[in-house]
Image (tube, rainbow, N blue to C red; front, side):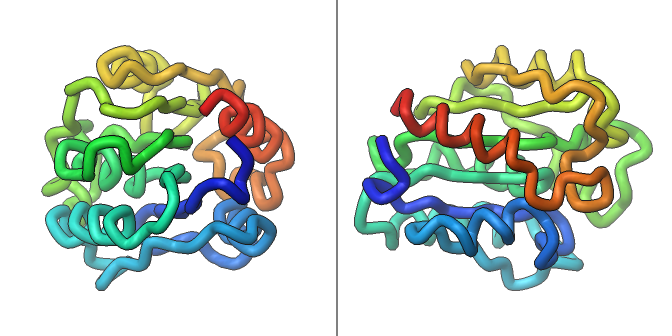
Length: 182
């Protein structure tokens, strides 16, 4: 699949992805990409975030490829059982936050538990070995439960602007390779 053949839905995490974040840069660069907006980026509500993903997928005119980061990954996984069958061709999931950890900020705790059911579409989970929000082995366990391919991003922090992943060309190359498998 080529990017021109699908609707790429960018699903940011908590507080949204700023202009220097790789998701924002990819959205500008990929002509079929659009952001899934949330009613509140700073006070996220699980049902509202899940429903925004569902509505965006339902509004798509072509097969959908989800590109989610952090809490956006949780929203996509929670939306998966409610998505129209066959509407999502694949999901590129990056930097899953382990919101089941005891040190999770209160504003995010109500997104728990993280679903463990297999995803009904092809997916990859890109995880860093030094992500402050998820241990790599936990990310691997979720990927296995979801039937997602685990991609080792090495020692890359939370894979955001703060960890030096503004343009993230390696990620874009990996995403292009993922598209070719769909």
